[in-house]
Image (cartoon, rainbow, N blue to C red; front, side, top):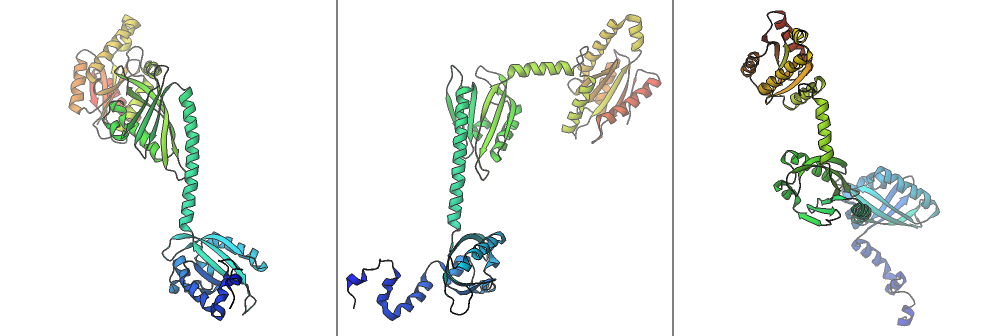
Length: 439
């Protein structure tokens, strides 16, 4: 019998040490193959890859029973994802003719339809039965490993993106004067950073979604669009601007503009929403004043012809269910007034009529000067009797012809105008100083 010194010639993990079993070494292989936790297969590699032997763990690994996998014995590629099957075939065609080891990672379907990742390592052996290359192969399911690697890569990418974004934010914070913010959806936390010469405070608000509902910081009429913008930016990566009225420390509301951008990881999950808030109150007021002057008739302060039709279309689109009437008014004998008393007097008449119309319909109507001595009104939630009552009041101090058309859902303002205009001319062609409901 060999001494211990002779046995130590081989490393503890060297299979030659099994020679101590003598002729009984053949019993080792069945024991190992039966109990090993990885799939082991013996495959002949020809036009198809045919399984010669598969151990019990192989079926557990690939997710099939023996019966379910029987059809794949003669075509190893049948359960693989097509593009990955092509990759594995290419690997085999490259190495098998030279008797080289085969290593490949690929995806395959389990019996339940799930897609898993597998890693295969095959070693060429001499085939005692025919000339086809024979490979002893170990296959392992590496799905969890792949998931971990992908998650790690995504995390690294997101971290790199956040670091870059953080650097940009720091630069912005250091150079831009104003109020900066960053919102973290997963923590529902908002951080405000004040960057003014006399104010460098940093304020953190936890449970921001609840705080926003109960806080008067955003004007109630603008709160919904503010929330929609923030939650929209939390759902997908986006960038935008939002103008709204916000409460200021001295009291009262001022116009602000927020430029915001959301940051997402590789999977599209939003990590944060950041941006800058600016006070634009003075510019907004000046712009509104210019717009108002552009929209209004200089003499009567009613909407101009083009603007009034836009306002009416907007109202009808937003309020399709209400009862609405379109009124066109044409003053009687206005040309004679101008010819007899002069245009300056005529202008005073127009201003007086506009004032009367505003007093009667201003709260419940959209009013415009259509041109010359013609006025148009779109009523809001007034009944036919209410409209007639107000027009009769207007007739007490003014002479005019009026055509009135009730709006039908889906009808355009132009169509309404045409119907009311036709009615007005019918009155004009008769006795004047009257009203006519076209419907």
